[in-house]
Amino acid sequence: MASLKELKGRINSVKSTQKITKAKQMVAAAKLRKAQAAAEAARPYASRLAEVMGSLAAKVAGQDNGPLLMRGTGSDQRHLLVVVNTDKGLCGGLNSNLVKEAKLQARALEAAGKTVTFYLVGKKGRAPIRRDYPNGIAAGYDTSLVRTPGFDEAAAIAHDLIAMFEAGKFDVAHLIAPEFKNALTQLPVTTQIIPVPAPTNTVAIDAVVEYEPGEEEILEELLPRYVTTQLFGALLEREASEQGASMTAMDNATRNAGELINKLTIQYNRSRQAAITTELIEIIAGAEAL
Amino acid sequence: MSLHFELVTPARLVRSEEVHMVVVPGTDGEFGVLEGHAPFMSTVKDGTIKVYKSAGSAPEEITVQGGFAEVGAKGLTVLAEHVEG
Image (cartoon, each protein chain N blue to C red):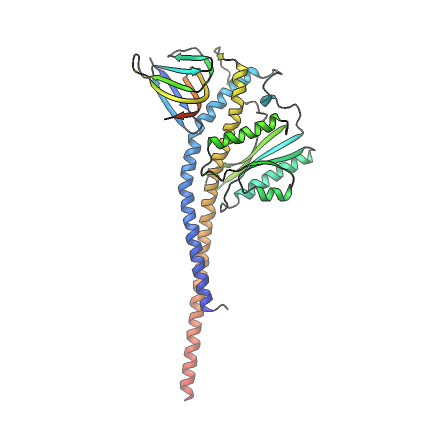
């Protein structure tokens, strides 16, 4: 049985932990709203770009001399997994779910006889992936230096990836990033980004569209932008997912701390009462003895 | 008689309005878009987009960096990487 002083110390320490988790929860809630708004605001650009891509790709499709980013290297032996993790913890199972998905994909690809390397965005995936694939990490991008990763960061990552692709370091790249459903659920999703998959919902434009300079030149300029936009979307989703997961995790932590405090308080009161009772018995017994 | 003009960046939808004419700095030269323009697509170089709210009015200038302009049945859409101001 812990002494009264020890119990009091425990209660106080749990109380201060609760204050921290509560504060973190409220911060996450406020940031989540902002992150969601940012994700919402980015949607028109992404959908427009996809539309333009669709109409252009339909025109160029079937030609052998399409841009490299579209037709690929012709083999699918070396795969690159771009894993987008958060930079900070305290967000529940978000990062471990992402790493789990990455490892699952890697194992599936390896079972099919392909080689797998990783490109890591964000700090939190580094350690667990390095543990299983000590030599598998090709490169990474540190997003922890800026407060809210934006389009510039996405452009830098895309530039990196395309440079690696053009240097022949890999054949296929997949993006593994969280998808924000709501504050409670964030699912890791894998999508192929390089070579750019031909859009499935191509909208046939009846009118004759004039292109300047030419269809292929436009497509060539458009593809890197498309990759960038996908990465930008992933960063935004990550931001929203991190805050959502953090909010939920911290809400749970706050509630657990409350329960623990109640339990400890009851224990404390019981011991206090027991101590008083023993003291009284001793006094009475002493008085009777006289 | 107006042209629907949209200016979109990755971060947000900057403009969505009805205007008279827009002059876009295309890679192969500037071009003006009025209502009823034929379907057209061009890359955009760094420069200023001039927006004429009505015929004969002074243009409003928007500096953009890199992107695309698409003219379709819905109007003119400019996808720019950066917009100043």
